[in-house]
Image (cartoon, rainbow, N blue to C red):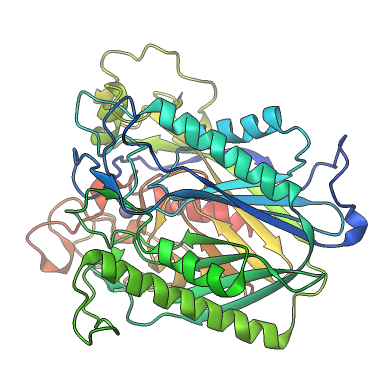
Length: 493
Ligand SMILES: [Zn+2]
């Protein structure tokens, strides 16, 4: 990741939506009496390098790396499901580095405008976080440039079509869910070493003939296997996950990135290529091996799930909450101020008084001239959500979660070098319930790293006796992000 902000301490609870508004006017394509329904569809969102009005920059590891070709196409992959009572939930996952919350909200509005027949109670928009896709955030575009707004609009439009098509294609379905682990396929380069090796999978089959409708696979590692030198557009290893799963299961596969923050990746793996017995010759080949392996693990879990039977009469229960994330990171505020980072609405925070006490209204177009000098003066609006479907639980996290916040393992006792002595540990999401937890990261926003507050370490002395800080804080909203998001999520659980 390479996002940049920093945030102060709190996030404010803006609004809480809860459950399903009733289905209104239009008649579903298939009557609710048909029981549980599912449909899926995908739309190509590959940028057209030849026709693009401006240079496409790869959201790789460095700023200013122009795309030189297309290795493999990018997609918006959508899944829409309706339970017996008519509650409908959609998930669309983009082969992109991230998608800001303002664009997510616009996408939802566009769906309602263009396809009012799609009565979707809750739509989540997530990104795989491929580091080989185009920069849609502004963190990889050279200073003086800006994100291609036409391309972002194109993505929104295609994602809307994918969701609408998935909605139309819904048919009676059976749900299967499985869990597995993927040991040795990711590396943690930041202490403490904690890796969430969980692979979650849910599969949907047509009730009529057993053919595959869709599968959702969730694992936890940066899709940055193509590496920093890559200049070709690619979905990175998730491309191979979905290919392997679709070939065997059928239908449309979706890949969700979970707890990949701080700093979980697979690009430095030293695993041998089964074809040669030697180390993978290229990064592209390594992506194929890693993605293929995750796909096989997911298929294995689905096979086991098939043997135990489908989820009986699954019913949805969902809740989402708007939150405000104070914005302190100078890199991010400056990027926004000069139009480098894609514009998003800002909320003013009160100059005095508790920061969790205000944050209403939009900031006027014109920013005060000295606004970047006041970190914490503004906040970003974001969103957390939980979707339950029978025993399955999706936890929708608007950024890059540290694995300590997924499976636990926050350093105890706290390192004396860390910046916030005595900071309490946030809860670990997978430990909060016995359900089958899908951590869907980069969901409905990209806020950067979500770092346990007690591990926050940007000031000397540094933890672990290091001479310099570990990588992470400069791409986080700030030390308040994790407690704010995790507490809001814990409330929803
Ligand atoms: Zn990242």
